[in-house]
Amino acid sequence: MSATHQLRCTNCGVKIDAEAVRSDFRCPDCKGLYEVIYPWSIGWGTHIGGGTQAAGSPATTEVRLPNPGGIRHLWQERKTSTLPVDQSGVWRFREMLPFMRDVEKVTTLREGNTPLYEMPRSAEIAGVDWLLAKHQGMNPTGSFKDTGMTAALSVAVERGFEWVACASTGNTSAAMAAYAARAGLRSIVFIPEGKIAWGKLSQSMDYGALTIQLKTDFDGCLKLLTKLVQQFPIYLLNSVNPYRLEGQKTPAIEILEQLEWQVPEHLVVPGGNLGNSSALGKGFLEMKHLGLISRVPKISVIQAQGANPLYRWFGDDNAVMRPVAAETRATAIRIGNPASWLKASRVIEETGGWCEQVSEQEIALAKAQIGAEGIGCEPASAVTLAGLKKLVAAGRVTREERVVLLLTGHTLKDPQFTIDFHKGELLTAAEIAGATEIERAQSNDLRKPPVVLEADEAVIIKALKARMAAVESK
Ligand code: F0G
Image 1 (cartoon, rainbow, N blue to C red):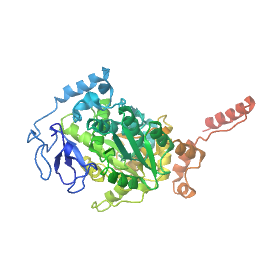
Image 2 (cartoon, rainbow, N blue to C red):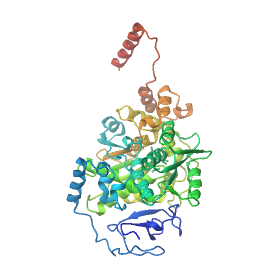
Image 3 (cartoon, rainbow, N blue to C red):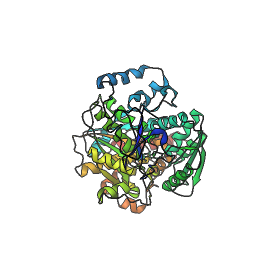
Image 4 (tube, rainbow, N blue to C red):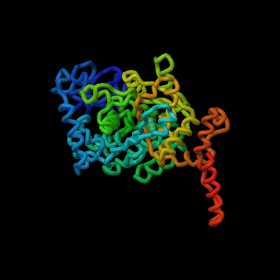
């Protein structure tokens, strides 16, 4: 029996002991996904039915964290510690994720601790006064997945698993392979053949995973893996695993710490399998419940137009989520049947956010604009700026609102996309024709294709002079 936490089905509400969870992390009654709850969570210990109630759990939410001032101070103090768990930007906040029996045994690459950058040029472009980017691409394997992987992989180790696996569009697999290697576990990666960026594919090989490319999409990979983990002792590390989301909620705490606990009005997040938006929402809502903040930011989710099931659900009758056949160059979010759609839709509802979709051309332009700020990100992350422009234009975000974009992956994850954009080889003629005149002009202005010259001083000087004159005449 686990007294530290329980798992609650987010669909039917049944609570179970953590050790009783099935290998596919689905509720046996309704196939819903679980969330981790603690003695201080709303609803802890009150028996809803079907599941096993944890022993010794209080009937109310009387168990509380230390006072908010005290806990903030403790988190701050740990920054000067040399202990690996204190240097991690996930485990430094361990009071918010107290599910490990021995927290000093976690597998950490010192994830988290990512920068919050000011984005003055993007702010102007989007039409807001104050815009920041939380760059999760600055994690050890270059994406936000590290914060979730340290959490769930540490559980795999604690439970004695030797094999771990995930289906992935590339970043989860990179993170899993790295953390598994650190912990001495064996890892298996299922990825859609030909549909992941080279940077990510190379990472899983470099970190020693068994990399299996399947002739299907991400949704097909996850479906197959879900069946396999029920037949072999393999620990599933996709975001259906609720411990992943516990780690992924910590950037919410970091953002607040970095803003001296001033809550921004809006957080804009890319949406693929929808684990990340769910996790960040859980983080903010829990902090409000614990009295660390008095309100939460609106959380808006942005999808690629070709992979937009949540957007369709949002604008439709809000009844059932219909999967789509996904297609987008932002391969990280090329997902048509998102596992965590129910959790994410509740986060949007509870925080008052929106769901938007953006075209391929809008993604490419926004990515170049983020790059031109000296920050850069992978294509899936750029949907945030592209989506923000639309939210502002539609009056969903006002100029005075303080907005944070969640940049999920490093620009080096997918260099081919960037090179193709700058060479003018990314978009089709029809896509370019679909852009507005202003967008086309902005794109042309940003494009910086490499210049090939003779290795001759005079030739170089002539070319430089021409370029300098062109810049000055603008
Ligand atoms: N941005 C990046 C860079 C991603 O890699 C992903 C998801 C997302 C956004 C969307 O996050 O799925 O939580 O809504 N990548 C997964 C993977 C699916 O396998 O790496 P989500």
